[in-house]
Image (cartoon, rainbow, N blue to C red; front, side, top):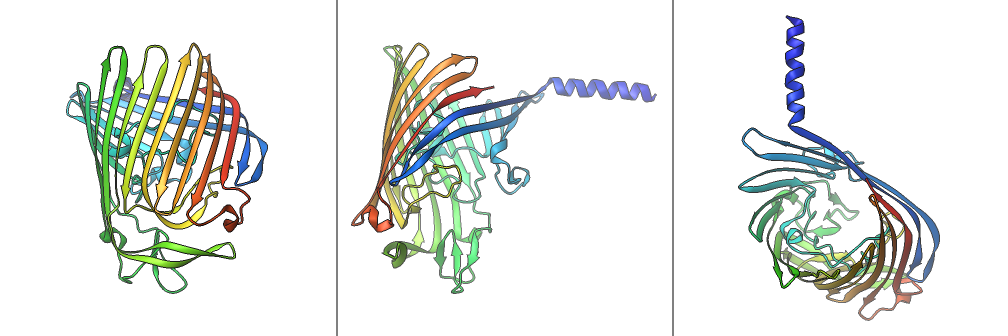
Length: 391
């Protein structure tokens, strides 16, 4: 009887496993990189990086597909295994009615728009200070995004939500004020989750072919809301540090909309353009960058209201060689950051490619020079060269 039970259990287990798949994929890079950060030379350094992703998928008896993936380098803090936080995991279920995705996924605006970037480099040189990933309102709360999308023919539509349910970024400063995301708020009885509406978004896609040209269009919108927020909107530099001189108090309703267009031709030429417009979206860092990988590099300029962004990328692929360049610019109320990048990729086959990149970025703040920040220059340069491997 025990032997029969064991045999039956093994048969069920093998049948279940046959209906599901678990895949392991990854990438590795090695090479060198260097550059100059606001007038300070960055020594030539070795670059080594590795990433591993687990992907699981299956299908129900009713024909629904489901799956999940986890990017290991984004889950080292353990949040992937916390049911109330996002830690690099993505989970979905899909059918004829569309796809529902939750976790570390794009909001509707980012889902709809094409980013103005073509090709790759070891340290992402083409993601310069003018590059826009179209995700300013994603991750505004705890990073758990729910998105529903549906495609019919050449059209696609998506809606997304991110809920304010994380109390971890509310602290008390030395003056006894409650601080939310580095902004002082007035009400001592403030409850973060009650005070902020969900970020919601909607996006549309359309793809078509015209006279041998592959064309794609994207349009998206996202919005949120927070009440009784005190935002630093101006500051003076004293001994190299900012001192707040003016503040905005009231309800903040950040919103963003954007549009993009992409073009691909049979001769290997491709181009992408996009434009985004923002309202009441405040950022404390203009020219936020990560040269060394420690995430601590930024230019603090008080809370600047982001106004708009535009970007363009062009590339040409012939044989195994891809050459591409991109340019982008952010406009703030009293500042701007812009940059351009150039990359070359040579496909070695089998998932390996040689990659070279260079970028030049510049930050300008109205009425201030680089010396006011204690800097020798207002630009950032990066370069890199090496081999990338996909497994």
